[in-house]
Amino acid sequence: MYPCRLEYKGEVFRSVEEMFHVLLYRMLIDKTKACKNAFECKEVYNTYVMDKKEKKGKNESDEEYEKREKQRLMDEYRIIHLCHQVKFEQFKPFRDIIINSGDKDIVEWCYWIYDKRIDTFGTYRDDDKGVFTGGNICGRSMMQCRKEYREGLLS
Image (cartoon, rainbow, N blue to C red):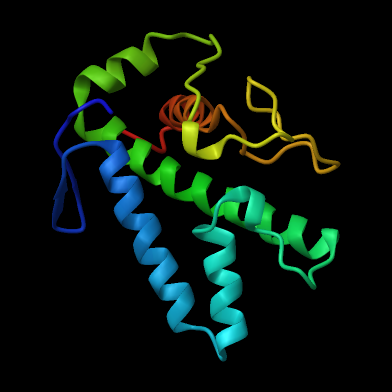
């Protein structure tokens, strides 16, 4: 965790990690509120809370499990990228490091995204080739911020 003051929608966070976990928790609450029955709520819980080894439901096919797991990874990427966008725009030392990295790959592994299907650099071993997931989710997000800055989407 690298401390820095971040403001988002009137709230103050002490770090990207704190902001990420608060927003992830709120998304989980919203998804649970939208459940139509207890089974759906259990699926939300299984996807976002349970230990990865226990996540697959007993009556769930591999395909259903993979679909839910991919959605979880994409939700986590969306949230961590929002956090990095906020930090990029509000915290000059971070912005300077990212901009001055040129075109170099940025690797910052995330302990909470570890998955046996993902290599160290963050490549998600999937036919879709491409989604922003993996152990290097933070590095990929930072490189995306750099790209958005160059395209004029971030200041």
